[in-house]
Image (cartoon, rainbow, N blue to C red):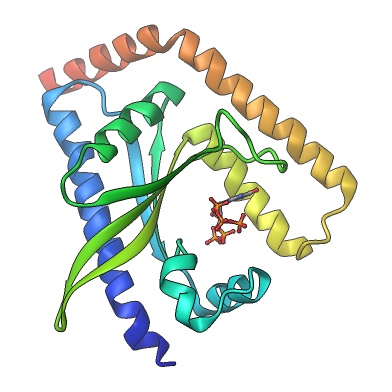
Amino acid sequence: MNWKTFLAPYAQVVEELKVKLRGMRSQFEHETNHSPIEFVTGRVKPISSIKEKMNRKNIPMDKIESDLQDIAGVRVVCQFVDDIYDIVERLKSRQDFVVIEERDYIRRKKESGYRSYHLIIEYPVETIHGTKFLVAEIQIRTLAMNFWATNEHSLNYKYAGQMPEKVQARLKNAAEAAFKLDEEMSKIKDEILEAQRVYHSNKENHT
Ligand code: 0O2
């Protein structure tokens, strides 16, 4: 397996999706005073993680393209929970890729406490051999969900699947606290948006 050759089109998918999603963000900023998108990141899964996941999930080499769905991954981070559902609807109605699976880990959080909305898409990418339809994952989550998931991911890495129960319990509490924060912020969303509008228009008047 030549991994560099295999992963090159996936790297292109990540780059194209980042441009498109960041484009949505700036369009929102120009046309409205609030962008539901705070920031967008993306990555190609490292080869070591690909191999680890193939082993863990028993995915043979000839099924990698269909069964390993997050080789190309982008993440959209939003301010409010409502924004996530707004973005999901917009992404589902786009013409440049097809959503083939949806996982709402917000209404149905994972056992770990993980919350996020995942869209699995089929993305047509142009290669020197013609169009290739590659599977990619878009994760959409709030800033609070992202804070939690980033910290939990680091701890998982540190403990390599042997996380002490005490730490697991603390993480579960932290997940609920992060979600409570999202809920509380949603209740004063209109006030926050109004404050941000005033702040931005004052800033513009001074430039
Ligand atoms: P990385 O390092 O983020 O690339 P599985 O691995 O069995 O849970 P599956 O079936 O491929 O996953 O699909 P799922 O759960 O929809 O998506 C997997 C990805 O979602 C993970 O990728 C994480 O990015 C994220 N994720 C899912 N569950 C958790 C969780 O409990 N905690 C955190 N921090 N992230 C989670 P990878 O492969 O783990 O790796």
